[in-house]
Image (cartoon, rainbow, N blue to C red; front, top):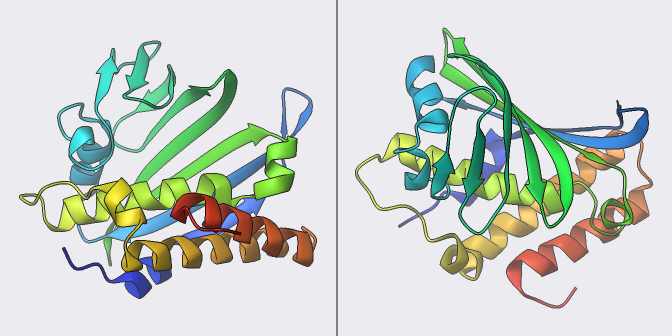
Length: 210
């Protein structure tokens, strides 16, 4: 499967912020992308338990407000809000930590629909070491899977592990990590520290030395 790495990197908008959550310092990443599909189709792709595994991960649970979900070999959580076809929010519980994810889908007369995801986590030493790319690269790989699913719905899902070790995958990971480092700098983070953290994240995802 041929992947337009530069095209996918350029299609993603990235932002970093430093809000508070429950009175404690937090960090948020937001990524957005436009898709040439109706808003209802985008919403269905990101909320339908039969479609989510075709671009992301197998999911189980009660996909309704107050219900719990579990992604295979990944996070689980509680659906805290759902406003079809425009917004849902969940807790993101993984490895003993809880963070928060909000997804918005909006119609756009020119491009079809816009997807936007914000992931908020409490500030931690992990953020200081790996920066926004640690979370941003992972979501961006998921966003690539969503883009391919919407563009080529009949084709098999991208093998993320295999892709990550391919030349195209390494280029996407490196480009994404660098872009998240720059987004962190734009949000006020120290440039040297932000770029070093981005390099560590790229090395982690691609399995190469930092």
